Image 1 (tube, helix red, strand yellow):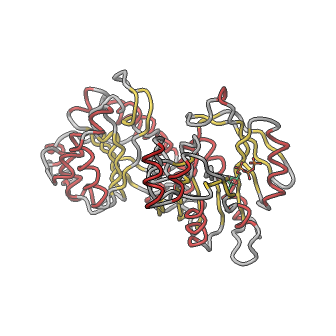
Image 2: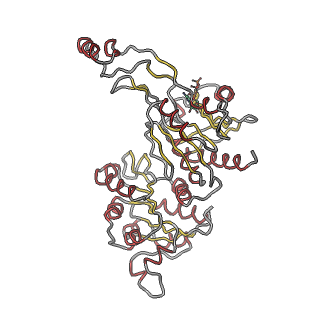
Image 3: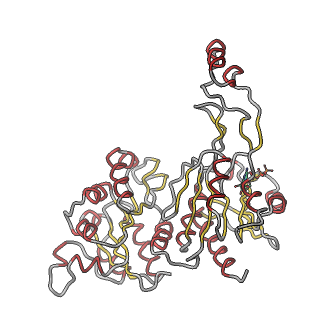
Length: 414
Ligand code: CTP
């Protein structure tokens, strides 16, 4: 997929540097040529020898590597590559990039390049959350740098939270997306993701436990296969996908409008856990449990305040069914999800027929499976003619397998 592409890979100094070795392996497997650059700190974690052996290319380490007349200058080095990737991108390196500093070979190349830049941050949770880091990341994004991850999880330092470098397969997907290559090139695909929040009053809402991880992984995989992805997401905790057009919504009704506005698309993957119901009225003021406050508030503003938390529910529009039953600009392939806790396959088959979609990805979301919010998933792909049971694997792997199936289905004569 990346044959003939040259990628400048800057490896920063962090424990995640070992994952860049896997990234190099995957990039070369895809036919890319990797030009590796190690920062001084990176050499504390990986050796130039292992990097050059895997890349099959010499490693650049400091500015003096490039001063020899027989070698390339830093400008030429950046011009001869298609993309610069920084993995792991440390807080320090991102701070220097956002300030436009050129204090070593890596930062000089990143300042000199006129090619796209993709960074995969990796650092301690608090370093990531620090206002300065967040400011720097925003600056980089505003400058057009693509930021992949970080992911949430156990960290080498013993803490838990966001800061772990994105997995090499996600970085690879983002690289392919930036280079717009792959079997879904020229296809537009819609992905819905995350939960929806249905307001009760200005501070409370009905919601569900969806993290949005599977939807983000699918969007990353599809973009990695070269698709132009419209990502419509409710308020999810998962990181946003890279290289996609992102539309953030809150309620099911807003998600419905965003989905319809995204048409036409070649395919739609409806991974969102849309709330089936919403409160039949939304109190304009915060509902108080103190009756006197409640009746005051109730007399002046929304009526919900008067009755405590009592409210009825109305059904939300079914976005998947509405899309599937369209006669005009119906996507060629519509994939629904079925989150079940029993009779998974039978319910998924019935759901596929009831909603009118083409495929259903069904999974068991009982608490003991750890699927809801967890990194892995075990799914069944239900189509009109067959049911396939896929092995338990990471959500990224599920996403890549689904992207592969969509690529094949869309390339078949329709
Ligand atoms: N879905 C949707 N709009 C809704 C509800 C669900 O588009 N209002 C989509 C989801 O994105 C998912 C699929 O429908 O792709 C399955 O959702 P699910 O909640 O499992 O189905 P329900 O229709 O709620 O069926 P049941 O409650 O009987 O399981």
